[in-house]
Every structure is written in C-alpha cells, then in structure tokens.
Image 1 (cartoon, rainbow, N blue to C red):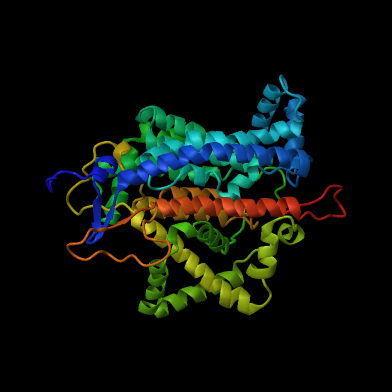
Image 2 (image 1 turned 90 degrees about the horizontal axis):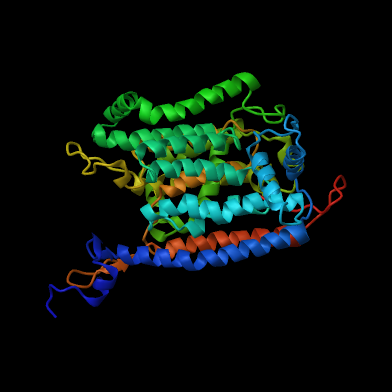
Length: 519
C-alpha cells in the first residue's frame, strides 16, 4: 500500500486531526460513538424513568409532597372551572397549572388515573421526551463532542422533579427551547427568532426570573449576527460598540421580539408591585451574595467528569504559586462575603426534607469558624476557578484584522465571546443572588447555560497525557470517556438520592404522611 493511501481505520473513522505535536483526535469516531451511545442508552432511560415513576407515584408518595399541595390544589381549581381563584401561598405564575389542566382533560377521557398522577405525568413527559428530543437533540447535532443528551436529561437537580408536580421542568424546557431556536435556526432566521421569543414568554409563565435569561438569549441572537456582519476583532471595547450598533440596525428583526417580552414583564411588575406572586413576605428580594459561591460549588460538583485530572489540579496549584498574594486576597474577600452576605432564611432551618438543610447545618453554616471560613472559603475559590477555567477553552477567539471566515450565524460554533461570557455571569448573578432561599433548583439554568457552551476535554481522567516522540504514531485522545463518565456520574447520584428518598422516610408530627428528602 502506498504511504499516500488512507488506512482502513481512516476510511471508517475519517482522518485524525493533530492537536499538538504527538497528540491527535479522531473526531468522526467520537461523533459516531456519541450517536450510537445515545441511541442505545435513551430507550433504557425511558424504561427506567417510567418504571421508577410508577413505583414512586403508586407505592412511595401517592399523596401530595411538600409544595405539591399548593400546585395540585391550584390546578384542581382550574379543572373545576374556577379560573379566577388564586392561592396566595403560590409565588410563581400559572403556566404549570394550565399544562396540568390540559393533561388531566386529555388523560381522563381514556384512563382512570388519579389527578395527582396526571399532573405529575406532565413533568415526566417533559423530562424524558420533550427535553432530550426537542431541546437537546438539535444542539447535539451541532456539537456532538460537546455533550450527550442522555446525560443532560439526567441532571440530578432537574430529573428529581420528573416524579413530582413542580414548575422547574417545564420552566427549563421552554427557556432552553428558546435558546435552541436561536442557535440552530430550524425555521430560518426570522421565524426562529420569533419562536424563540414566544418560548421565552411562555417560560416566564412558569418562573418569573426567566426574564433574565430571555435577555441573555437576546444578546446571543444579536451577537452571533454582529460578530459576522460587524467583523469582531481582538479589540474588546470596539466589539461592544459594534454589538450595540448592530442591535440598533437589526432592531426590528432581532431585538423587537424579545423587547415585547420585557414590556409585558414591566406591565406585570407594575400590576403586581413585586416580582413575586402570592407569598411576598417570605420571598423578598435581598443581596444574598454568597449564593453565587453556592452555585459555583454545585456546578463544580456536578461537572467533576469534565474537569477532574492531574493537569487541571496542577493548573490550580500553579496559579496559587504564581500569584500567591492575589489568591490569598481573593480568599479573604470570599470570607468577608460569607460573613456579611449570608442570608439564613427561616425555611432553610425549619425544613429537614431538603439536602440544603443538612449541607447548611453541618458544613456551609457550621458554627465552627474553622469549617465555615477556613475550609469553605478555599472550596468556593476553587469552585470559582473551575467555573471559569473549564469554560475558557471554549471562548471564541477573533483575529486582529481578518474577519471570521463564516457568512451565516448558523455555521458558527456553539461558543461564547468575551461579551456573552460576561453576560452569562451577570445573568447567573441576577438570577440567584437576590433570592434569600438556598435552593439548588435555582442553579438548574445557570448549569445548563454554562454546560451547553463547554466543549468537553479529551484529556485522560486518570493518568498523564504523554505525547508520543517524533517519528512515532501520535497518541489518540477522545472526549468519549468523559462524556460517558458524566452520564454515569449523574445516574449514580440519581440512584443514591432515589434510594434515600424511598428507604429513609421519617415522620413529622404536623403531617399525616411519611416525609422524605429531596433536593
């Protein structure tokens, strides 16, 4: 065989790409492996969730659980035709209750399911069908080496609520669908933008704070056109000006659909005189600055398969020794944030049915200063480092002179620029910091918007990456192992928390049914 002819493996997997001297990737093989893995795993996941849903709903909690009593009660009012009734204890808009009413009306015509089961099925269908197939699959087709839909549909903070009647699942689905329309443009640029804005509007009827993520999605929509048409370069300040000019130039086609959402939201604020519906006294806005570090810590924990390696830990150690004074000052600032900007909500200490109760009591809010400050501050510092550094390789780079060799935004990689990266952090801040409650559910969207832009590392999880010597066959690396580990990691956490939920019940004197622990 001639040295110029491709080998048999190259004919099957495509030519390898040299990453650095002595290291290569076979991207086509990774993509094919990812597709096959998702095709095989997805049906098994559907069976798993259907089986566990049936068991949970019929054997474990065939009664309303925690906040379900408010959501179910309100939906039953709608089922009974009382559309003007509103439970003052409910703090979110009625989007979920309309879906619950619709599903109940459909299923009651051919089944004898209880109302509670029909309502919970809304989230199960959303989590195991709509999210992976309609929302994540199109993004996966654009970035098959970035994430696996079967993994992200199992994200523990979200998949917990596939079994219950809460607002989080469909709030996440609609705002991420809005995001997907912008990136993939399945119906053309103009129609996709309007559909994106409509989905964002609907998502706000499930969770008011999604108006913040609507702003982020609008910025992404404008930016991906501006960086091509206005030719972004390495001058960061100029890029901001170009973005603003483009938003004015393309106001009617790109900005206006989202601006209508903001107008509707301000009308809502004027009418309600608060962002919170119902129980305003227990959900007042404040400055809970340490919440940002809680969020980063949760993201660090759940994204462990993406960043864990000797080289990454060595990178953090190197940063410390290169900038020891700066690192120490950063840790001191975090300690001050812990001291002066920690909000302890009464619900947090009164409700032992959430993991946050135990995390705060035994670790985060521990009365021992050695744990609360000396231990937790470096943990938060490392978590912040992980959040930034895992995303950094996925930042879009621009040439000082040469424009991007791309003519259509749909051909752009799913990456953040320095502008949208800043916007992501700001939106995360605005979403979680004003909330006085320490609620992991609030970190679902910050995680998803962060994770979708992360291109998974191909570095080995264990061991060292040693490039081959000159003249030898390059070492082949792949992200497949990490993506598979992410799925196993999420499912492992889900199985453990499900076991605790089922096998570790306890009683409350004020409740007639057994109580259990969820996120």
